[in-house]
Image (cartoon, rainbow, N blue to C red; front, top):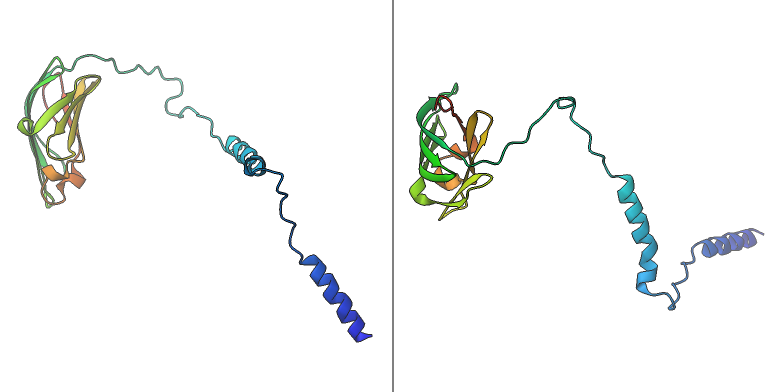
Amino acid sequence: MRALVLLALAVLLVSCATPEPAPSAQGTAAELEKPVAISEKKRRQDNQIESQPLKHLAGRKLKPIPDKELDVRTRCSFKDVQGGRGSMDLQVTKAEVKRFVAEVTIPKQGLCRFDMKQFEQTSKMPNVVLTDRESACTVRMWEQEKGVTVAFNSCQAKCSGDAFSYLWPILVDTRSGRCA
């Protein structure tokens, strides 16, 4: 009797463990993948995020920055609260860079030097862009409200030590010619 129960249990287990039959040769690979693609597309649609206005911008009348040729002239120096200091000599007339020399010293990190002689102007509008001939260094300049921003990107080769990691854009007040 015990052997009969064990045999019935073994037959039951074997019948549960049989593999699924292979798909018929009549269906193509594209037809077999089609239901998966549809469910993937539906899943992506369900996960889409709708753009929401930022709470700080709600109800504000924001104006786009006008596209106009950059005109700025300054010879300034600055010092920040951390002890960093710098100077810049910049002249841009009708989006054409005539003069650009900047030097920024960051305490305990190093020094960054930029000179127009090493750069080539690659863009005038909407931003003035200078690209270094030898490295990937890019300097961008644009006007926003009452100031001009001079920003640096991928300019590790122009800096000593770890100074580039601490280099911030230089801001020029167009009314006074001061920079920070």
